[in-house]
Image 1 (cartoon, helix red, strand yellow):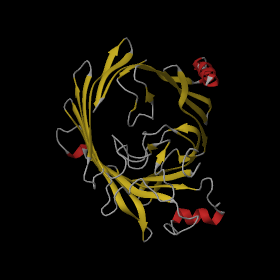
Image 2: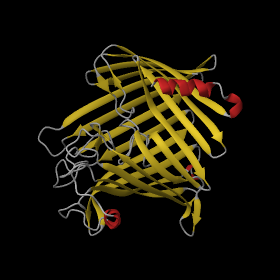
Image 3: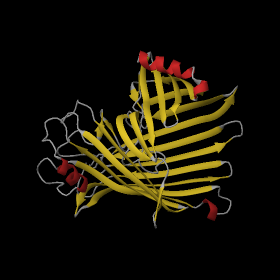
Image 4: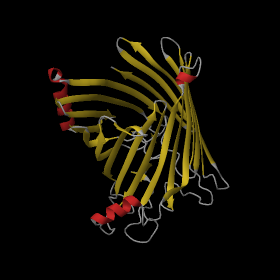
Length: 380
């Protein structure tokens, strides 16, 4: 971690060489119990006064070589939240390092990949500029490969995924998504031809080394802002993921629906997700071989609600002129097919975008059953 700080100090003194400090942030936090918040990069807080101090910095070494660093100091412990190297070769970007991933248009969470876990140490390929394909329009892709933790029933399995996004019309885009957990210590090694079979899912659910944990699906968004009077923006979106395979196609679906709109001084987000599978209780994000399920270091890689659950999220922002008042409500029901459904309600009040001497300040109060959480955020 000392090396991280040395590199950061180096970057701070490279302004003539195109170093850029995106932000410096300081966040004192009061919390009444030990807790890890959802969709918060798995940051852990103690039952006491906490604080976060971090810097987000970029540096362009050469025309096609960039580095991004986001070290944080939390309660005296320094860690690299994100840090990666981007190498551009023609229209292909190679990313190496620690980076968070998010699949889908969801604004509150995502069915496949979200920031509910800490960022992955990964390698990734993507295209910088979209390729225009007949009928499918502008097309972008990215593929990643990482390895999950050792402390699992099957240690050190691989996690890989691909996302291809198409924009056939200005108002409409959709993506095809696929994520696979495979391999790991103690499982039979795969040959080169086996990797192709894994990708095709041709032997999924058959005993043997080709039976892996696969999730696949699609998402879409429709932007209707230019077609509605008075409304500044209006977007409808959906995210659908199959946890199993039947006939070569995904089945046993989880789904997320959402709408985002802006009118006058008000912004509104309404999002609903549900992954309960009929006649298959506690099926989603679970697997018969990878019994830790679809998790990384104990946290769900996709939607924070977990398995056999539903989640309803509402966010309303109102522009006060000198600041923005944000109100959030989130209700989560789990164990939907049991006789004792568990309900969790979360409330958040936030006053954000308070500009004081070039500092963006926010005040935030969060309540989650027995949890009370207060945070002041200062971004320089």
